[in-house]
Every structure is written in structure tokens, then in C-alpha cells.
Length: 118
Image 1 (cartoon, rainbow, N blue to C red):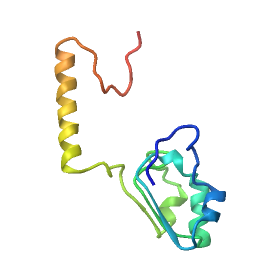
Image 2 (image 1 turned 90 degrees about the vertical axis):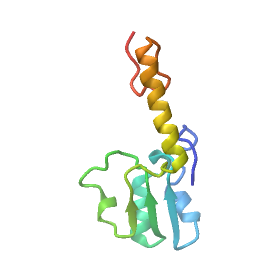
Image 3 (image 1 turned 135 degrees about the horizontal axis):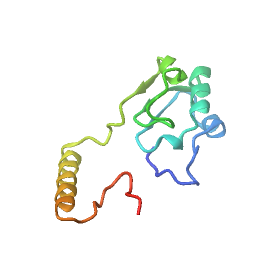
């Protein structure tokens, strides 16, 4: 699944959603961690309702050391890197360089993570 995380999609996949899915389904999330209720996912995998999960994003990142997701052998976690492709890598480098140029010219970055307090 690939959807944005907005109020309408938070925990879109929960106990109720998993119950409606075909037995033995595998869920893959490369979107946003909050789209899946982690506790419900753990229950669905442990019960066998889901055969497994592939997660590139998690509700809490980095994953806590005591997370049950780390104990499930039918859950594969990747380090939030599913964006990677030759095109995305090119765009990442281009945007980074544009941000450097903008800062050096006294302009505001377009892709700033933590906005400067005014």
C-alpha cells in the first residue's frame, strides 16, 4: 500500500482491517509508518492472519530495541530506504545542491526539515 499519512489514513490498517483481509496475506508498507497500527500488525502476524509484513517505515522510528516487530521472523524491516532508484538518487543530489546554493545566496531552503524560528 502507498498512501499519505493524514488523519483519514492514520491506522488505516488496524485489527478491523486485518480481519477483513484474506488469510495468509502479506502487507508491504513503503508509505508512512502511522498508516499501520503496529500493535494490530503484531497481533495479525502472531495469529497467522497475516503471513508476514515488509516494512520500510514504522510508526516509531528508529524502531525501539524492545519492539515486538524485531522478534517476529515473518516481518522484514528495511531502513526507510525504499525510495531508492537511480532517478530518486539523482533528485536527492540535485535538491541537496540547490539547498546549498540557496543558503550561500542568502535564500531560504525549499526542503528544510526543521524550520528556523523567526
